[in-house]
Image (cartoon, rainbow, N blue to C red):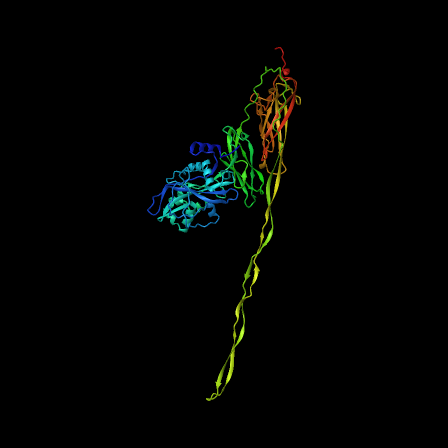
Length: 613
């Protein structure tokens, strides 16, 4: 069974603070600020609550806006208002020009239930109510219906909502509807006139109504002041936007449940799988962000071929005390196998054996089978990388190059006239003329290819294969304070030491990719390898690590020892140890170990009783 969710904490806040039935469908990336409003004039004014939100559905992988954005508002805007169409901030960033809509009525929807206050009129921020509203199941179903898509399609993890606050106001006696981005663009066109007359609305409370807490959809987070008048450049780059992600998760644990367990104060590697439908390459690589305990960790430059997947991870140290920790994961490309991990942090140093007594007995003792915990001594995973495959092709660009020249066309222009020689009509005709050029301009041009070579190459993908192996040994020996030990033979009632030597090896990859073995627990035959254990100290840290018994509070010399019971029968005394917490992106490595000493007689055989002299 699956349900869509965000963090348990946010789900609880929604259930107790919002009237819509909430199934925790949204993950909000939105914050806000604002300030007090100035007084208006008869031609330049804004009425509080005359606000709304432009909602765009965005493909989380491609960044493409799907369909036409919808403007939601609780009011009925003026019928004669000027607006700039249904254009999102992403459209404007990608080059769409600010153009007043000509003809047709302004399209809007009145949502049910009504929107919370979007744009503050007093500086009292209402962002938490906005988050609850747009992260609710009801809002998701309303938006899906209004856009004509199914609820499952909207909330399946492929799409995100881009929210942009809208203000309806009067400027220069004319009614307007604008998002913060449109107000900044319009003010640039008016050389600052909008800011000079409507600054508290257009350049303070409207843009600060929403901004991103973390980068998403290629849009940057904002970490500047949450109050005060903002510049056009700041608004265009950072303000007037919020994002809601819909994440499909395995069913979240109930309170007290968890999805993974870690030891306290331990270096661990937490991993999820990043999947993609489309190719992710170095031109548009993926960055995966993990957040835990107020810190953020990123794995970036992730590339994956079309339709493939890859493990992604981060390395961190668990807190020193027992608690439940929520880890959130997000990506700017592809989709993740998990977006929320609930980790249970435990302290295993809680159940050491009691102090053995000289008069302890166990006449019915029989040895128990040695346990066999989960063992994994090697891990393998792959990481994609890519190399550009050049494919140079000539791009033809034929253009006609003119070559206009004069073409001569000489022609003889003749004429004749009569020359009289007397008054009686005598005379003669004379033929004459001249040459005239009836030429013309002719284009002797030609087609010339002004083309160029263009690399229409592609990315070839390859994998690095990583292998990590764990090898460990247990050395159980009589404690150096045992006076009568011989090699590995000793009497019962004395202490033993256990030294674990563990080596984690790989032929490829940095130590950031794995940890050494950091934990070990030993169980003992007198307790049937149950009930009590010793959690060992990590005395040497690294890929070659060393673990030993903790100092025994019952030892006179504070030795790292475990005392064998004085009643233990002659024979083999075997200590079982499980060594673990060697972490890799492919999971934890662990190993079962045993080693023994030989028991002959007891500590009482070393006592000598003599009469007092």
